Length: 313
Image (cartoon, rainbow, N blue to C red; front, side):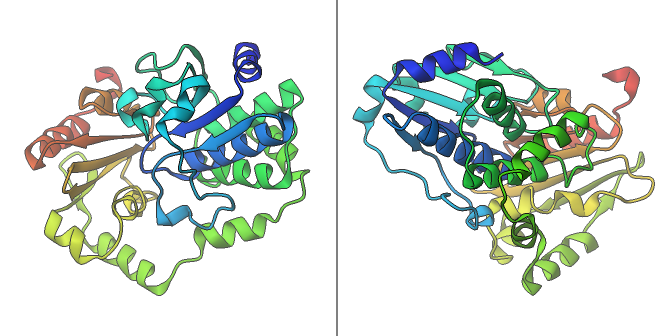
């Protein structure tokens, strides 16, 4: 499955790894993991990782992005990870690379690169990178394994989501053989400051429901700024305060920012991806997102989500 990807990697002296904006654990885990796999497997090449950063995952080793000039792209291969649409890619300079490849596990939206491997049966992009390393006999250090495992854990919801399968645990087992501390990962991911617990409590108290038991939270710009937290924390970080509520099978978190309304959509039952795509977003069947223009558009999306049935998909 990865022959053409490896062929392109062998061909170019410089590899620049991109992923989506506002990175989550899977985006960073796959990026850091692949960077170190390629550094160890192809020691003669220059390997870079670029993009924006979020404080939420600053604990990950080697998570500081590389600062490179535009000229580096002229004879480089740009590798795009964990991204379903061009508009979501962090650092648009990938378009000036000599060639491009993509590795992704999201539902297909559009062609992005010259060579693409997309497979929605994997719980995470980190799972796909791990599969490639195993299939192609690449070197996986403890650092790379720890990064990839972190992404697998976050994108599988601690191995609870429907995307988790026997293959997930096969790949996780391979990574754990590299002897890193899983307890360090879990402590960094799930041990919260008191302020974060208080913030979750505030969000829990603001949960609203519709006539069809769709749960939602809408946070206006003034309120969002009063929380003194980054947009990632308020949007993706808070969406699942609405999960595991008996009788609620779909929920959405809206967060106003200076650049639009961030929207995180989840469901334990329905394929909500078509709704995200309708509003310019994407993702997975039961976990997707989009950036909306304003509150009116957010309420239209909420209506669509509220009226969703298996027959309407």
